[in-house]
Image (cartoon, rainbow, N blue to C red; front, side):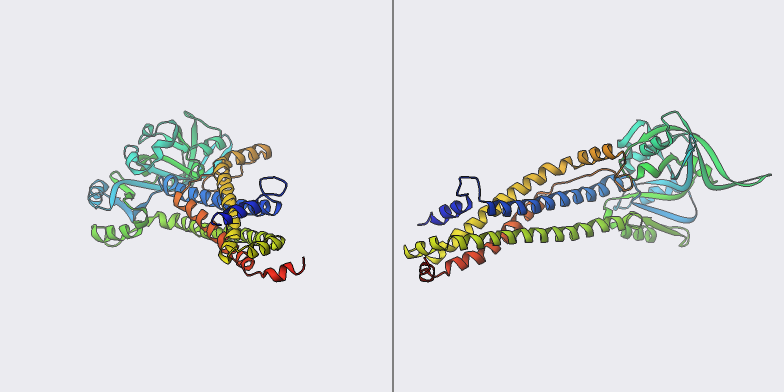
Length: 412
């Protein structure tokens, strides 16, 4: 009778009318499948957001900036000293200010950023996402590189001119006015992130001229570290080891500007995982309910099996096998649905946007749905579901083994 638990477990799983599974088994499978699919989809999307934040957004946002209350002089030698640190991959002068960009009777607040185009390949991933034009076309006198969203909003393209009004004031006989400059668009990048709306790049020397910073001086030193998550400690070490201006220097890092967003994603992923595991727990209760009903319906057969010499262990294994089959089918179906739906979420969102004529994702720091499947995470989901399902299956299976044939057959 070694194969009896497997045979009867599968028989009870099947419908009496020859269908793939009984109605109660199908309901248990459906609940479990939806729970597993939801968990796979949500965790994969959250993984994608976390990865995109680390690679795409933090690949452009400065990881660490050494700043000073006064312009930093002789930055070339200072950068050479900073790059001798084992924790620093590269460094470059950096200037940032706020401004108002306008064109075609439209305007938008932006972050005007001065960079050295020749250093950008080693400092960020932005050169890989230039949609048109070239970053190297930025010159100390002219040129600006903007994001694709901003270009569409202002209705401009390569070769068009835009006006930028900065916070730097200029005095004249008529009074004091914000400085406005006209620049030609020489490049458009597309990160598909919030930076497409606000980041504007000009040559470092042009930005220095706008802010009236003298030659060979800069506002800050932008640093790319060998470990994103040690940016703050690296900043403290650099301030202590380098001979800066009597403590007037300080640093800012991505952990101060975007760290809360990163932590929020990690926290949300944990909370959503907990919520979805509770959904799966409820689905596992469906398996328990299914087995309870099956045991009740099969009491006569259980009594006959016991009188024929079937042991309590074999009876327990029969219903454990039934629960295991439901759990396996539900997990496989849910995992398959999750793996199919997740890569197509972005297409679904685009379809909804086309129907509603609204951009649903533009208000987020990434305007599309990234995803990342992690094998260990998927395995943990599957194993956890199987473990919970078998655990819940044990109680009705053990109850079936404790039934007394005399009490059952007496009423027949």
